Length: 348
Ligand code: MLT
Image 1 (cartoon, rainbow, N blue to C red):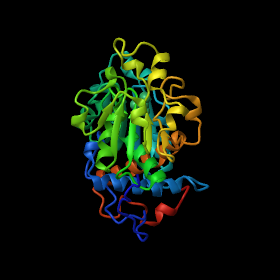
Image 2: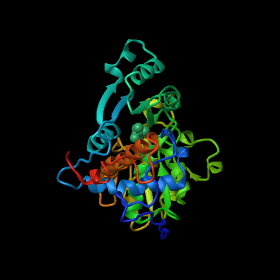
Image 3: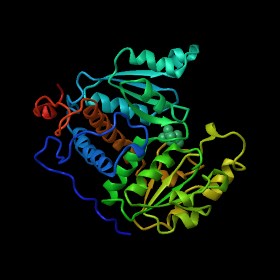
Image 4: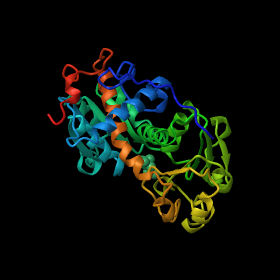
């Protein structure tokens, strides 16, 4: 189905090529629900400008010079943590990484006390990943720093959904009217919850598929078509988004074995043939090959999985940059970029 192009917000004469105030209304990014449709488009447009920075020989601009960003990760992460750190460095922020295993949490300190102690050192932003839903909301109440939710339990992972929307828009030109099928462990997935909100705001038609035991209650009320048939979900889809089976969040048995899961729900080349001829395959990672996705699909020509990873840096740069603007109450035109010319002074 042909997507409807979103209205362009670009204006070539502004430092970022944007015609909107270069900031967000909120101090924190905790959920996709924090963002208006215009702010979502602003982030996606800003990420395009940020992506260009990544193509330069010196991939660095001074936009966040003098800002301190703490990456506080209480759960494992490869892509999200690394892409935030690269994004911060490309914007010239000073970054500090704190992992649960090396912090005082391993000595019994509470999350609230850890946050109060970090706040005492006046960081400008804290990127937080935690196993508990709502951890970001607690941090936002306790800290003056901007809080970016990098995944809170089963609740939300807003920057991943923004990365996914950016990647779909780049490939398809827009999201309105696109048929997006999300297949996998829906129940435990914060990526699903954030994507569901974002895709609906941008006008995509969402179909959700997984074992009945891994569905959310009242799926139809959430505005998605729910099915337990992968063949049904894949038929005619423009985008197929696969989700990992999140064994670490499961208490009890939700399906008989990984082998049977793959047989019933795994994405194979045979199943993929039922999708639209130009359908793309996505996965937020980490992938379990032979469980939710066959290797030949993961590595095949329809896969945009590594594009999602690459776009993660640009989208996170955009979020950091725009939140910095909101923190400083920046005037239209955005946070100080050294009088406007700073944006171009790469590598300072
Ligand atoms: C997440 O942190 O939620 C990941 O991006 C997806 C996953 O762990 O399966």
